Image (cartoon, rainbow, N blue to C red; front, side, top):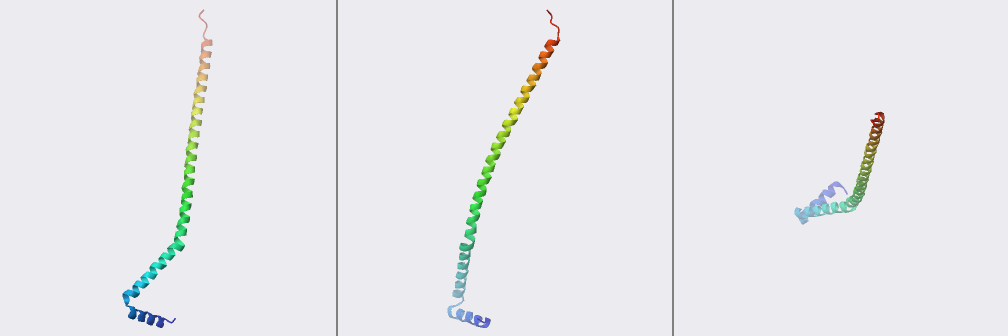
Length: 108
């Protein structure tokens, strides 16, 4: 259609039905267009993002649980090493006491 014909057609429609009715019809079409766009394009993307975020949250929770278990294992290893170090120190002290006791002459 030519631009002059479109303007004339719009003018005739407005003069026949009135500006409020025509503008309400255009607004209704705009609302329909936006609704259609949202339901066809946006909602599937939102659902996909929702599923991805749920998956990521689950993975983060699993990693957090793994970190907690690793921290517990590390704490256990540290405690065992400290206990072994204390035991070795006690063994060395015991040997030193035996050596010191044998180095003095017997008073009998």
